[in-house]
Image (cartoon, rainbow over all chains, first blue to last red; front, side, top):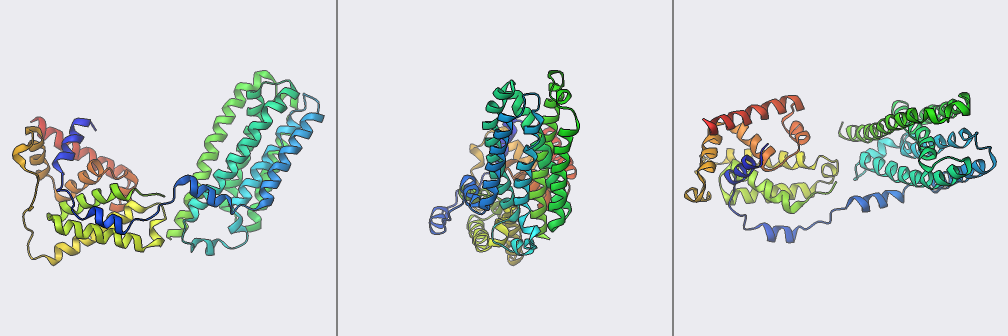
Length: 234
Length: 146
């Protein structure tokens, strides 16, 4: 719509100034919670062993990266699905323990809470992978960006698969399928020989896969949060 | 999840004013809308706040119009003689629209209610809403040019 018409519409629908607005807002001023504060409150609800597990996987990556031969980069990057599994398992905690009905009755929207927790863990994992990429890259004789792509792609693939599975299957079954998906991504890294998977010619394919898995992970995060909202309204 | 109450107050008030055609009644209904919104913790945090606010406002306006015996002319419309000719022409074209289409123009283009919230408010798909808005805009532009 062009700005001129919009301006004219604003003028055509102009209403006289309200006279009681200031007094009303002063009397009923509410404190709205900002996005950052909301995210921080949800961080407090994430269990400590999820954080600890994530740091553990990160350290394991560093140890493997230090001890493995440079051509065995798969041994390191195949661990990143574990990070994704930990993050997603936290997102489906209520469903797994049969507490999702109770959670739906809470005052705050469950969809927003799940989204905030997944975002917090996702950012934390990205920070870990971001810190690991230059170190592991230098040990394996690869550029930081290259190492970042190799670490991030299996992570995002597992995150997308796990969110889809934990939405479709309830409780422990969902967690088992999610773990199986993480294992399958890990196995894929082992099944394809490292020298073929991580050669320079395959890098464009890796970038393509990274974009696809990123889109899938964002879509799945949105669907997971949306489903909680639909459940709350139904 | 946050709602700019200050901005939304003006928009809900404008919406009520154009349904009730009275500043005082519009302001009363606006305040009642927000009081009901504040009182409900169940709905306001579901990410559908705008839809909820406009649903309350619309229902209150309908009740208010039912209560009134007849609809008086606007008591304090901005002075038309000070308006540019283009704005007057547009006002004339808006008058030719059905009340529902006029309301849709107000909500979408003046109050800037997102398409998603409007679809839920009217219970129609995005496709239907886009087609309807395009049709209204086309009629308005044709009227202004012709």
